[in-house]
Image (cartoon, one colour):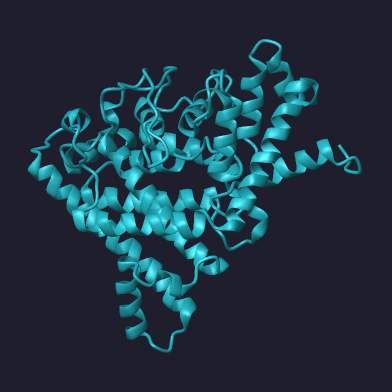
Length: 383
């Protein structure tokens, strides 16, 4: 028996009845013979890890622009944290870990340089040309823009991973795509990526905010989720110092939120009588969510971060710079597409120039965008 067939047999026997089995995938857009040693979703995960867009996440902003320091999270470290939380949740819930991890690793492939400010400016500049949304761009990356195989463009991922990318939902985005059952929810493996993303960015943004001193400990007074944890840890380890206290608090906060979500999912599955993958897909109720009490405390944390970190004058200033840089680059390339690298310029001969320019800008890292800006607008910079 092939190893892949053995793995698929184990999935059928051991996964929860509402978990997705790799043997039941709708397959790939371009037919391929599956690998004898790896399941379909393991191959997807591996293709994502080895693609160019994944590597570029290392130099794309989470909150702090790359050149501000080596400590702060980037899109890549954020993605790894999301994948770790996702895989832990999938294992405990007896879901398909490989499918969940593949979706988690791909969930930010379409992000622009300079974080959400980059996405906002590209969406404005692309008005009349389809707009811009990072999940749609992520799907475009894996279906069109990555070019690694002689038989097809893109990575030729399975239908379920691509559905998970386009249906990734947060407070900032809930895109719809008619090709992926728009009236249905994605599988549970995709839904847990959404909450893992939220847990990761809330807690590591808090960590980075404290490290940067944009947030001070005294600012956190009255924030219930933090205060209870900080009081307990500083009492248990009074001589450890703030750096240790901070790391232990973030660790504890992630643990308590993940544990809460898992327990709530198990409760919701039982209460809603969920037995199959289709039960998940056809439910309009939130199967994956915090308990009411944790949701209340988590909402207070998000509001705190919005007020004290994302709207901090230093972060806002950098966001304004980012918008200025991307708009200047976009307008300059549009004025004269010959400034684009040859592979992108050739595309403008048979594609809408604005779409080509948008693909080029969205794929840039923070560092590359800053270098391009200097090359185009600094007369003393070599081009």
